[in-house]
Image 1 (cartoon, one colour):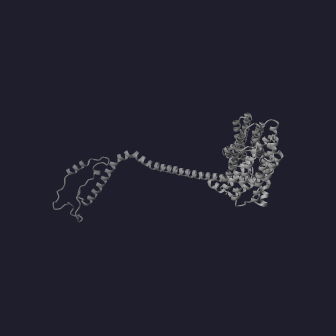
Image 2 (cartoon, helix red, strand yellow):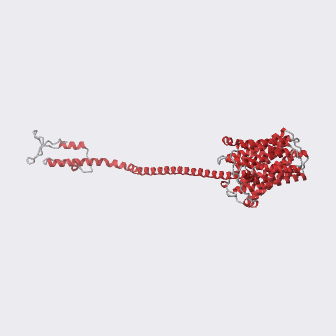
Image 3 (cartoon, one colour):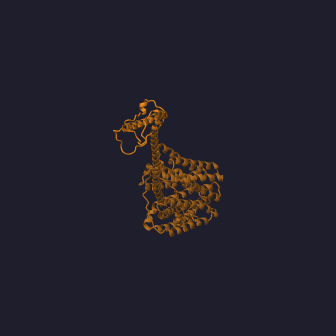
Length: 552
């Protein structure tokens, strides 16, 4: 954020100085008008004259810039504003003030268009959102700071008017010296109110009624304070709270806007605004209840403006948004013209506290119409909505158009980022599931293999006693077979010898101990052998050469 501010700080400084001068003159009209004895109706006409000029300037200033350039238009409009501010205390007549205010409104709108075009050119696609937020912050702080400057002088003199003229004059220095590039100003043709109403009824009607609320608060608030007997410093505090509430509540309302049905939020905020106005009406001339009412009533007005812009864009295509932005600004300007006239007339007919009743009635109308629209149309899914627009009602159509375009692109970027994050999460979940499935399959395979190998072993363990029972007879039978084979071989070699096998001596099923066999063999008679010959053999039989192994 510091890097972004470093590139546009001169432009923002110029905007703050402009808003200081413009904010001072707004409140001075009510203060000095009360001193001059102007009626509520006359001051209402003077206030409406400013918004007539503002609406005209927003329409024709881009044409002037295209003809003669930014610098010339900016310098000329600034000179007219300075002159008009100084002329206000010199021509203290309602008709003169109406003309001067119309001129100030026209020039101020043109200055906004020029300054915002330079600011937009200084921002990149990545920093445009932050630059817009900083611009709106500078405007709000300028208006709030202007109320503090009003306490330094007396509205009955020309000093404060001259100070406002000086602030506007010196604001041109940082803006003109820092604006090296002359950007192209292109404002789309405004969409007609009928077409805008068809596309978004709540957006068209809501923005018109909200223009009435905003102009009544900013233009007739000082008139109300003067007529109920508030001092100059208390009136300045009262006006400051109208904009301080917007500065505080803008962020949480914007956060809610991107996470819920915006029609419900519009209905709820409007109802809250109506409740604050009714509280102010019941408070009478008590200072702190009036300050609290101003804080909350003004705190929902500016966020409602941005909220209605965002809601209208949700019902439009990208090609329709630029034209709709101009149409919304035009509808807001019409409401700003009508609002002070209605409030001034009510205050003239009834009493100064009708100021609160007019505001409360307008807020109720917005809330009820939003509630009606909830029953007529389906909700736009939150993931398909554009981002909340942090923009003030004082912004020009060009700034609104740029903000709308940024909000649309920002919403698309957020949606793409959300889809990418979801895809990454799904891929990670798939990998985890695949790994778990592999481990489970491997574990099942190992269990099956283990069971397949254990089954024969278990069967072998079951027959092991039988195997041990037949093992020894099998071994003895093998031994008897070997002895019989040896005996047969010897009988062939020694035909005269009488040899018997154990199998012949006893049945195969009965076995005698080997010690008994040996004793029986020893008891049998033997022929005497020639000590010179190791073997006894037949004379006809010729034994093989070589010695024989000893027999057992």
